[in-house]
Length: 158
Image 1 (spheres, one colour):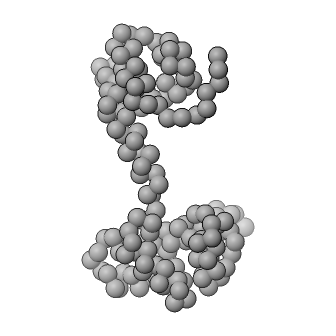
Image 2 (image 1 turned 120 degrees about the vertical axis):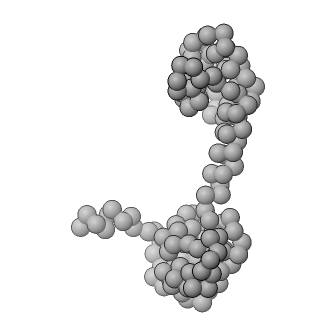
Image 3 (image 1 turned 90 degrees about the horizontal axis):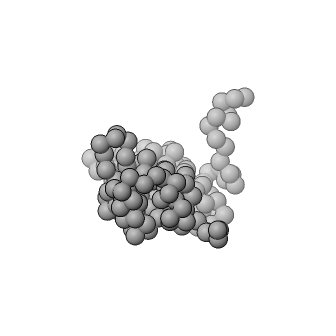
């Protein structure tokens, strides 16, 4: 059996899973038929079929998988909303700390849910890719430049 590089299940593979489940084939049989790992097929089916009367729906599963994939990149609120990004970056350029930015944004935009963020989220945005050139510049704008951020648990254990 030829080793396959990791890739997501396609819509066609999901349709085959739905069809073979309708024919009451086992997860092992489906995995062999698709040349996929049994754990991949089991994980996919168990995500959607928890009760015996539930049916696997290929369209719904594929739509949800695509939606999850697209939204993984946009988990960062600062990267998603340009107005918020502009405010945060402007604050960093004015030598404000993330705590000051988070406090001032609440005063400047009290009723705007998009323009609310915690200092922790600002730090997470800055330290998300410390080797990227933009993030190195953002780290340099912080009052206390550290190449890495310590985890909260590590500080509390001392």
